[in-house]
Image (cartoon, rainbow, N blue to C red):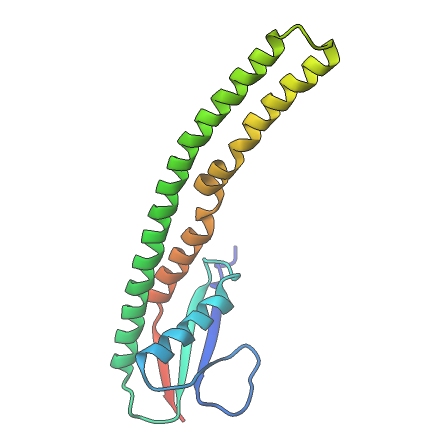
Length: 178
């Protein structure tokens, strides 16, 4: 049996480089806001890679004014900030989804009641009565699609972002001064 190979995703970050290197990310600045934008680009680049892959960051600096500990602090601050942002967005989405679900369940009940009432009318022909009943029935179930989507499917993207942030938080950044 072969030992399991660990797959790695290596991202090179160059500070103010004038040459374009495919697959690399560029950091234009020496402050936290520009570093946070760079980390956004790193996450965008690795978001389609499998989460089980190890993430390696290699930071190529033009100057020595920024210490590796400061870079590590900025990375940790960025991860905490994004974690709070995505967690609160996830909770808000769930809360809104459940509120919307209750409203739509009431509309479903009204549509199903309307379908039953329409079925009890004997003034229309049999085909028209069946068409009206099925329209109410179908409309009632279609109304439920958006809250189900909000509760079940939309949070997947946020959960993936939270996993990427956790992966970035555990990553060590190797610093190389050019």
